[in-house]
Amino acid sequence: MNPHRQSAGKSDIIDFVKYKYSKNQKDILIGLLLGDGYLEYNGFKGTRLQVKQSQQKKEYVMWLYDQFAHCVRTKPKQRLDNGQWYFFTRYCEYLTELRNTFYISNIKIVPDSIADLLTSPLTLAIWYMDDGRLDFRKNSHYAYSISTDSFTKEQVVSLQRVLYKRFGIETSIHMSLCRGKFYPKIYIGKKGRDLFLDLIRPYILECFSYKLPQ
Image 1 (cartoon, rainbow, N blue to C red):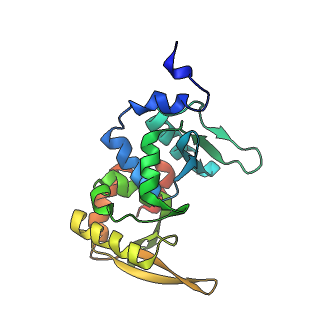
Image 2 (tube, rainbow, N blue to C red; image 1 turned 135 degrees about the vertical axis):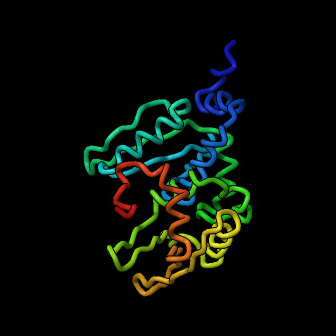
């Protein structure tokens, strides 16, 4: 009897319990979870990663697919209604562990263990490609910001501390007003921008080149 075919729902978990994610893959996953990535939990099958991006970010979707192709059943597809590109990984117990770390009652958080998870420039680059913005005015000013609207100010302070302690990147927190409510954003100005750029530049894909100073 083939142990992988005990049931349609459990086969995915059985297949991937033995699989160990590489350091590179884990770094990418952490960056996605700080950014636009979503871990979908199914109480029976486990957890899978969802990746969805606009037509303009097709290169990014295809690159992410290449990183996780071994645990994706079908190649990225495009929606007919809005042109969005997307794919899903297979359900996996390791992703359930990550979901338990990054979600409370279906709400994404910055976990207390973030200092042990945010350790790689690759993670920074993924996070920036997802949620970063460049404010560039030639010969006068440039800075970076990262949207952290879905996190509490206390959680964003934790991220700020890790950026400094782990990478030496100095930042500040700006509160932006949207629809009558203030949201925290990480701002990387003159004191931290050069180091930040040096760390992320090797990983930035061409479709995100507009987020780098030219």
